Length: 227
Image 1: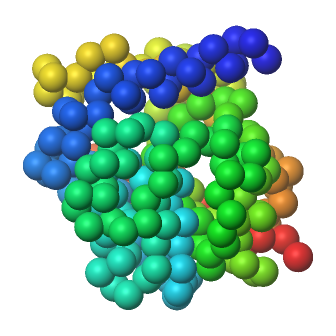
Image 2: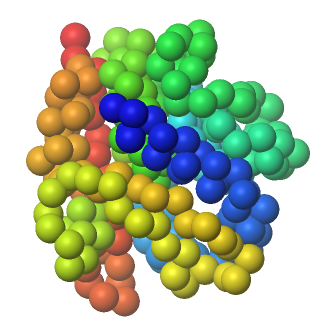
């Protein structure tokens, strides 16, 4: 447990150091997989739920929350990095809150929504487990959780296909990025088991394809809060 807590803290510290180049990369369209595949995939998945309200956990600089707000959805953004929260607010996201996943898991977000979305924001171990166990309380009855993350089969590389911490990398990003955060690898079986244990029924598993390679650019889970 102590190793998980320490490494989860390392993830947050790295994102705090890299907030400025991340904002520039997203707003400058520098990430090809996002332009080609994953941004549209998660936006379409959330809109398919026809939500009136959404909580975006790990909203970053706010692009997804703002895209939903432009379509008439009431959005609450949540992030633990002050610079990202400030950027989202400056871009027009009225309800953006500075909270860690640990704080959310402890009940510091007193609101509910029709959908909760986590877009490439579930990187850690213990903090992610605790957060997902708390998400049902953030959802209206029959509400939906949408999670987009790295596809385990694509992200595994040459390492063993087992859960565990992996070294991070900013390969393909600008030189402004430094000290890539570690991340916790989960198999498809582990992801589905975690959703089940957190009180969700998996309704859909999508694998958005990268048109350049014909391989999955991500995996996208849509899970309904269990009655």
